[in-house]
Length: 322
Image (cartoon, rainbow, N blue to C red; front, side):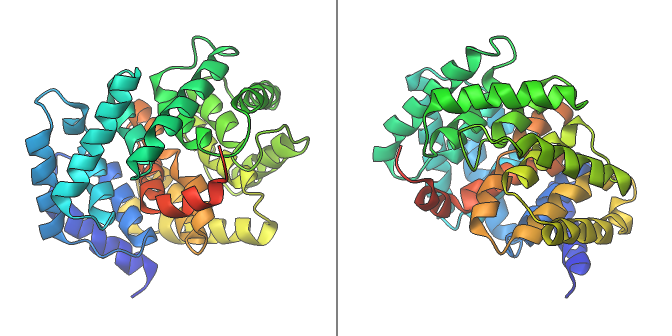
């Protein structure tokens, strides 16, 4: 079965389960999620996870928001027993709340970034909070709860948080000089550029500019919603062959009838499919998703943060010491 056939099959199965009330971009994104991770969609298991989550989530909980299908899918592919997976997510979110994180959708997304080993939670939360504080020193008003997932993800990596935050600020300023627009998406992009190295790299921004310009020349949209993806490509230092593979995958997916009106949704899926042989690339690509989804309701961004949960063990092993 080709990738296109698998995407269409998974989309139709998800659409049957989720119904027409869920934004098509979310369904497309989740279809890409299952296909990228090479997981078969099992409606029975999905519904079981959804049922347990509904029982544990309060009426006004963010777990019942438009991100609900994302949380269910993430827990579904984790491989854990449904009730246990739901309970662990709730427990992580409660730990974040007790530590002082404000409760909203981003807090639950941040919980997805945390290790399953409870003894690691205190240091992970401490480092995430420290990175948040360091980022606020440069962007007091721009840094908010929507940065929680990035702070948790990057805070777990090796390197001084103050150095990382300073590097983010330098990248942010440089990117603006190259006609990247100010805002949350640019902040997220500057954050992910520090994935491979918390210290400033002279050619990092130039790599991002080359990638942005290359995509534009091929008529691939490079709006603010795509900034985090462009950032991941630059941070991973993808070579020309790898970038061409992403483009080829994008063109294949974007040509599908399913994506006729949602070509923006094709790029994140193409990126994930092109990199699925690399677990570390998964970890890098993971984080952009739901933060952008919260702002612009484009589920193709949401796919990426879920991938981090599916490869959390690989991420932890690659992170080094705190």
